[in-house]
Image (cartoon, rainbow, N blue to C red; front, side, top):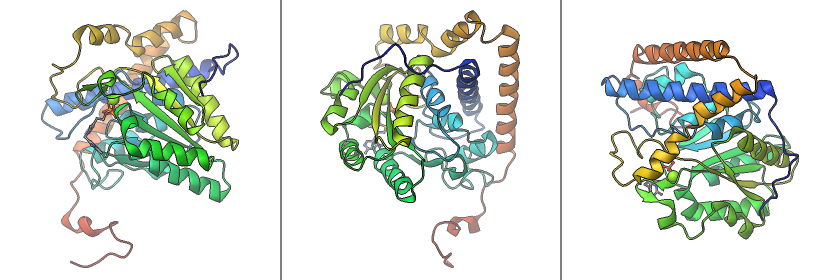
Length: 333
Ligand SMILES: Cc1ncc(C[n+]2csc(CCOP(=O)(O)OP(=O)(O)O)c2C)c(N)n1
Ligand SMILES: [Mg+2]
């Protein structure tokens, strides 16, 4: 069932707008520093940039509490930054260092940080959703008001686990929000070449849950959809499917030459970069000043630089770490 877009939708106040923008800049500065460090040969990792998708987790996360949980994917560092994972241990983890969130044993595609609510990062397409259901079921059993957000891509909506998860979440009225970041491509395949519906949100109807397609690059639309879905889940109203339309500015993975992407489509999407667009809106409405945003940019750039230096200056895990945290009882080799 598609939701009507009412005129009286939730609106972020000035402080919340700035909070969303701050999270977006942390994501963008982090992305920029990651690519620079890889190019310098100081970081070796498979990197799935989410440049262009900054609005989605930022506008979702301002509606989440620290103990609300998320499940994300390999292209999910933006989701983690938005949820509030501290940058030092995040960088140390992607660099495989012992000071990382998982002591360097997870690496960039398997980051967890339960203290911030990041419960899993998965490289298996479609698997964030059943895990999110489990966390939401646990919250329900605990009688808590915690909610879980499952982030995934458009390609993942064609995987069986997506359909199984929506079915069960609806049947059991789980406090889970399914957020599809539809960036128009799944690896090298265009969305319309491999998806039978033109809107992923239509699939919510098959599972009798609210579903909505929103402009995932519009902070106001994204905020309203996320807030309503999160409140519904918290109040026992069950799950929602949100399809956030966006665009992947860079290739599937760092080093991908983009040849398969439609050049005109890509140029048009990049001309609508959500960061300068939101910046202009904040200035125009008087919510922010040039000086205030320049100071924010400078502080965040310094914070990211500090995290990068911290990570690269940290040790790799020692061999005895290999067995630690793997089994309930550590076994001797
Ligand atoms: C079960 C499974 N099948 C295939 C792959 C290979 N693979 C990795 S990423 C990807 C594309 C997924 O696209 P989408 O869900 O749109 O997410 P995006 O990368 O665009 O964020 C594929 C097919 C995988 N990792 N797991
Ligand atoms: Mg995609």
